[in-house]
Image (cartoon, rainbow, N blue to C red; front, side, top):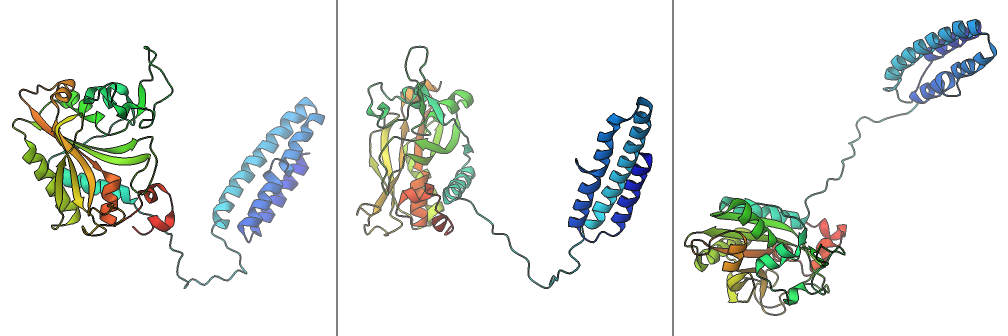
Length: 342
């Protein structure tokens, strides 16, 4: 048995000297040190020996196995740089360039806007996509019977609170972070909140059930509507150039008073009217207004001392404007033919 082990060692070391490729090395390693290799066969046959012989032969087998493992390890380093000696390789050929991706257009527009507001002294916050009914509606002055709470507009989570109500929703807007930010940081305050929102509605070229917004909130003493318009005009010019035009029209929102729509001239048709802007020449991308006193109170802010304005950009709509995309559904389609254009 001892002679057999020594012969295995001699054969293995001799074979290592003649290796010409890594494939040959792997085959040789399997032959001698594999689970069904020659060393393992010897170890399995120890059951037929006496106790004294088992100990003696077992020690020798382990010693030879460790030595071969060390030699095979050294040999592996040598053969790992080997190629097939008969294989021709033209070292003058150009290498294969890996194709790199890039940021999604929605991420690009979000980062552009974050940079603009950073220059204006706004901090950027993130908020939870799964919200409570309180933060998503009640604290924002949205009444219990407001249609925005209906199932056709909101994705409710099938889990009830202690009162037996389905209290959790996929946030329909980024506005809940207004309350969270006011409670945490107080006033004065300048924050933006970019993020994903969800609404249970039919999709078309202007609407998606999953979309992106960028919420903005500014609170301080003596803040008025002219400050709001000034900020929105500046943002439009930063994003779309000095020729960008903004118009604001009155609109009701429960969480602001007064409220207004902010519309930029259609990027696709330059105000002439097209399918994207429904022939109006303008695209509504901003909901805005002066923060309602009830919302300030919900955030722990005294409305007698502080005032503020809030706005919400549709990031998806902004991307449509900036890149001239007519169908909003393309952004979430995952179609590389579309995404590779940006």
